[in-house]
Image (cartoon, rainbow, N blue to C red; front, side):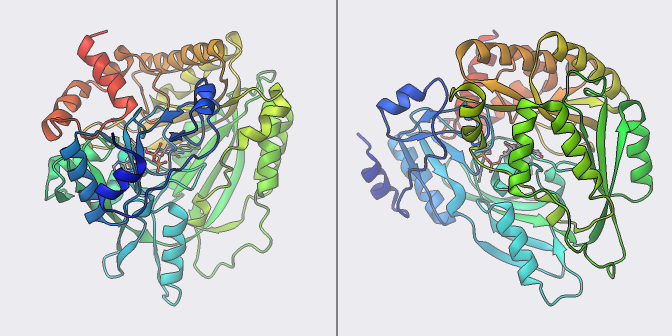
Length: 501
Ligand SMILES: Cc1cc2nc3c(=O)[nH]c(=O)nc-3n(C[C@H](O)[C@H](O)[C@H](O)COP(=O)(O)OP(=O)(O)OC[C@H]3O[C@@H](n4cnc5c(N)ncnc54)[C@H](O)[C@@H]3O)c2cc1C
């Protein structure tokens, strides 16, 4: 039998770590208590408590290759985890061996001529941004990232590529557009360079491929010039939103979003929002002195209010944001945000006498002209079904015509819904139904949804949004016939599509 010790030994790599981020607070909590062995969970929803056989943390491409060779020899399946923010078990495999990529966090090279940086795929955004700032401290013109996810920072580049993530760019494609190339350890243990010229099919499959085609070892990212940007904030009604986005884009704004009211008792609910956009300014513009941005304590207070007094939450939030209009930021730092891992553990005793709960996210895409009608329907639905909305945002994304499992198949308006979910069985069943109705409403408008969150979407919904899914599964088995790389998410959809259910 493979134990932690023997696995580490035969893998011939750095010592394994047995990370248990947060407590296992889902339905599986009692099981986790009985068996305090190798349990992991996702950071945000904490709804994916998974028991592992072993966890390894290689620090080099050779270490990754060794793991794959050994897993092949011993017939183990591997799952791949970075920052653990996916929420449908995409990074975990029950009783599997987990490859924790965060040991792969080296800066390999910075090409200041071409604006390219090669880094280990396990690096998280804060380290990358800090490095870029420090390494170019003396340069008049600096490079930085074009986009990252918003709302949380400790996500890895490997995770960003595997979901084909996007940020709050007003006219940006998902992150595939920012990727020059990457290296990947495939199912045979070979290290391959993937780009638009080399292993081009694998390039398109692995980006947005949820870790099913191999372990991304390093990423070469295309950088953009670092700029000073000014934030412009106003309150905008839904019927003025799309023209307002267009005006901002035409005026040269680069980033922006619309965070809508979450108060179901108000007529503003899902129809009025804080519209914040960022435009480049003259590099000589001084940075804001004493900026009025959210502190960790402000964030804690706001998340508490969003659960207990939504009217107040909106007032505080919109007031705070409006007060920051005109502030100057660096284009990369502006994309970072406060986020407290495990914040719900602090809320649980206050909200429900300690019963576990958390938030789950959905991101639904609709054609831009359909946004107002979609949100009006969602409003009626949330009121009728007492859906507890904690926050929500609208962003824009441009069409991705490269990745195989592309979600940005049109220039969408993307709506993010962060819903409160208690972890008891009936609340989970209700949440699954609430999220499915959201997906169905998006699909009725010719829209789509993001696969990186829960796995409550049924086969018909996945097939409607991703008609290429059966071919994706076929190509997965072509590149990985022994299914070396798996996850609970993969198993669920592989089996659903095989059964036709
Ligand atoms: C609070 C919050 C805010 C978010 N905001 C956004 C947002 O603004 N925009 C957006 O697009 N998404 C957003 N997300 C979703 C997030 O971008 C994805 O879930 C992303 O994949 C998480 O990265 P991670 O490093 O945490 O990866 P994990 O959750 O650990 O893994 C996610 C997937 O990537 C695979 N993977 C990870 N590393 C590698 C690797 N090196 N090689 C191969 N496969 C790998 C895993 O197998 C898994 O399938 C958000 C999520 C949360 C919880």
